[in-house]
Image (cartoon, rainbow, N blue to C red; front, side):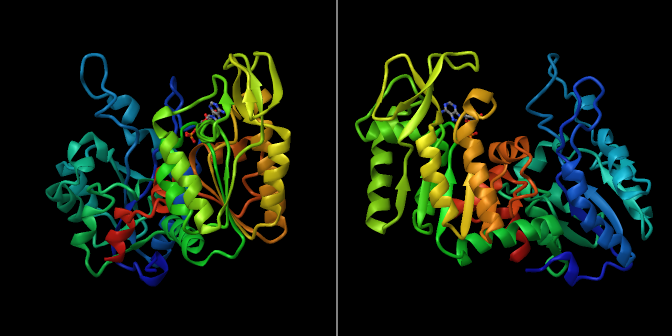
Length: 404
Ligand code: AMP
């Protein structure tokens, strides 16, 4: 894998695609969580230490999709100027800003940039050409630098101008930053080189979002644990009464096929034997534990039950490789967090016993952080959608463009 470590940046201008799509305070527009900025610092620092200059490119939100009421772009909310001070504090040096990623100012500031200096370009997504993967737009960005570095795993599944198309202008001078390199290495390790038993834990609301990943993982894993709202479509497919639990009736047949495929491949597919059910989707609702064969009318499963949690913990404890994507229940509500917490405890314990555990981004990462376990698992991925697509078996344009 070609990373920033394989290049000397002395005298070069590195165009680095980072993921500075950070959450901002609604009122003050200050950065409320700088994790993504902190994650990019080692790559930037390596280039600066080599004697190179850095031109940072990123998106922030979806400015062209979230227009103001009068139909214009909400520049104040989406300008990357909002993050300049945070980047500067994280780097311990001033960061210049170009208020338009295409304009004369960007070209002039990029041309004048000296070794050791950092320039941040304005939000790439102010231009529709970014998400369209426009070649001329990518070429203009490319003209600012001499080496292209992709360190934005969160957008690696998109063939955008700055994440993939731009790489063609640097056939001999492109590489992964440290964030990307680590994400790719970990994902590859699981798909190609997992120590066994390999257990995948999938959860979350909808089975339709996870069908492709389930289908692909069945070819690789030894155990497939299913929890969360998506489990009830499987339970219904098995002929059980699921009350008013989440269900996607148009996926019943696919669930049956998946269960058959698992059986024919010798994969142990685990569904929850019990649930914590509630009479409304609320933390204040009446709730009780019940067997999943017969959930009463008017009750919905909002968490896996204690028996299911114990069964899952046992399988996880015996695993050497663990991939977790999606919560076991509505973990945002304290009455329905126990299943997710129990699974998180089991993953932490297995990790302490030498297993490799990778937590998918999005809600699973949020759950692990909620319980304070983010440093007790092997790796928490920064890319929700990108990681999912990787495990669906797709080629990610951001990775392919560097490897080409
Ligand atoms: P996803 O984005 O598909 O991974 O789904 C995550 C969301 O699924 C979280 O916000 C959970 O609250 C929700 N969820 C998990 N289990 C259930 C359930 N049994 N019923 C309804 N929602 C659930």
